[in-house]
View (cartoon, rainbow, N blue to C red):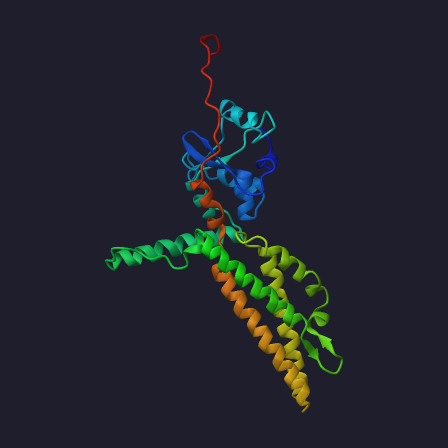
Length: 286
């Protein structure tokens, strides 16, 4: 049996691909791991260590016979190993087992969805309304809104970085932050090209920039209490205005960004990869 870390994703695929096995659309553990931001072995271990939670309706290892069509089509290449695959129910169950930020976020989404639907049904509503459905399935309209907000966020950050924060030294926010700001704009521009992917690193870097800028702003404010320089006050007020705008757009963007479930579950509704029909075995092969 191969080591947990040896499992692979679909070769050459940048996004998860669904295949049909045992009458179920399933996804390789490596692709599920990528979506949850963990290593493949963590997904495999979660399945192995919780057999009571993962029946064959949730996850299983295909047989050699089932894997042969996948090898013949180049979906997997290595012989002698059996990758773990997860069904749609397995992906949802996995979210409640993994101890990872994206898994916890997905679990919160599941809970929020259940509570919202249960509350509306208990109140006698004939139809239920899901708040911010883009968190579960990002459609083209929502993706367009996300792109627009991202562009606004990038422009707001660029404007903030170019803003003078020390009038005496003529220092901008970007210069004051140094390394924190040096690569962020490049990362943000690359992020704009991926409307359906939430980048946790970008979010972390942006929040770090916001926190450090606010720290500099507050220290400069404290210094100004001992000074009556009106120019300095105007400069800092300008920084605060732009900083508040960045935080506002960031909050709006985060609310619309697709969550982990929106990145994974919609693939199960797509047409699974068509595999050749199994060849009937001759009696002497049985």
